[in-house]
Image 1 (cartoon, rainbow, N blue to C red):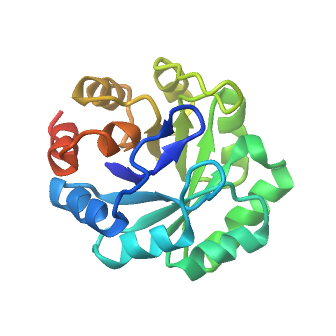
Image 2: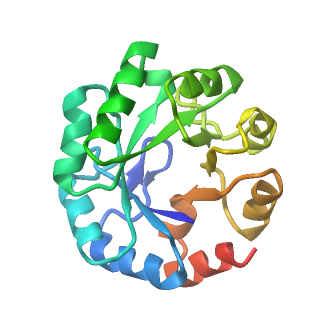
Length: 208
């Protein structure tokens, strides 16, 4: 259960612009979250490095820096911010960048969530030696969510990979479908931020 600290999104606007990152992270942990995802992009998501540092400081669970990682500097910055994991989006990188940034992240002690959208991107992730692979159900161009995407792509993910379904998870029913499809984790943001009781919302997803 990867629970996201997310103030806004390009497609939905403000979700909870005034949220307290530390308090929200603590609620997620209390509900049984096993990892945080914290937006640090300012322009599109209203996040910041300070959000990551505040959220991570108050909990024992690890944190993913959720941002557009497009250079080696971005990988190192994630480590300096206190993140435990960095996001690499296959669609945003060429094969050389993907492999180089993955290797750099591992070298400096970060886990790497490699995000894919289809079977071809899964193949590219595997060539880069990815072992933690996400399937994002949201189209990065149109922002539309295809709630069947992760199920379709699941069979292309190797058995020994840690499989994460991202976007479009609104409740326990969605999480149960993804678990049956073979996913080890779900990354959930909007539904938790807007829930009114993040700890209970996380616990409900964990119990599916």
